[in-house]
Image (cartoon, rainbow, N blue to C red; front, side, top):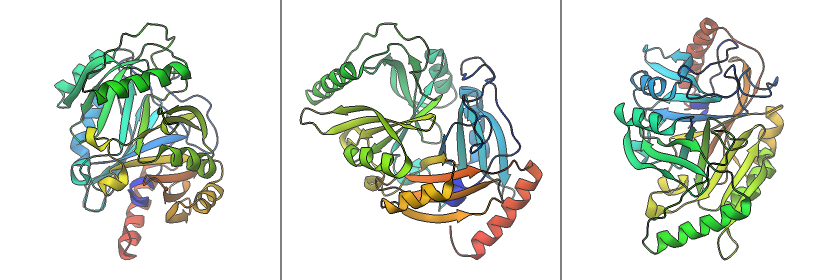
Length: 356
């Protein structure tokens, strides 16, 4: 993904409220702890994804996930190029797939998995299947305390859809993870029975849509993200040899999970796929400082910081694990009309400049 995929800002200050009661954050649908460096109602971490036939794809996310479209940007060909939607408290930045913004099918998969937390996982899972999603795993108890099923949406992105059931300690998480890996290695299907001890349908600190990045080296991720993006490690799982195979990191008010790649189970990293159809968009207090720090720790600079024509100062990076990040600081709201006008002007300059 490029600056074009992740570089477009929201329209006027808006918040969202779930339409069917199955997805929520605060009572008013906004993220907790509003701050000046992110648009009102946004978490610090948003998700970017390339979606084929974006205009036609949006109804799936609206009907199944209760998503609300808060911004649409059209190209000179009157095709929808970019949309921002809110799913509960999480912003999804969607780009119409093309030769420069490849879809999961064109990449051959994705190094990202998305966990959609809802109050009634079975109902939303069934709704996804009825709307055309491909079932990959049925609803079942998962060792980390969630009851969920897995689907591939019509655009090719893979989602867990479910509900948090049991809170477990880091020690119990590690024990169960190792047991699950051993069972898989022995050709057995793990079966878990969760105890209903959770106080909420989301784990503590989780977003409505919580992403998991598949990487080749979790140890490297644990080293890079705190140094480059000021993340903090809140959970780490090691294998029997003491090497990290999973981690949860806090980025501002948001949660990012990182897990080891297992190509034999179609859990492939961005380098092994040769790219990614999805990435991240991180709001920070001072974008220049974060981008400079990330580059100092060997992130690749895709686009330097651009001016706030879209209401944000923005840069884009490729991290050392192969994931793509937009990094931004919110400056001011921009009306939908002005945003569309500036977007067309930006596209004109972008194409003329020969970059994408």
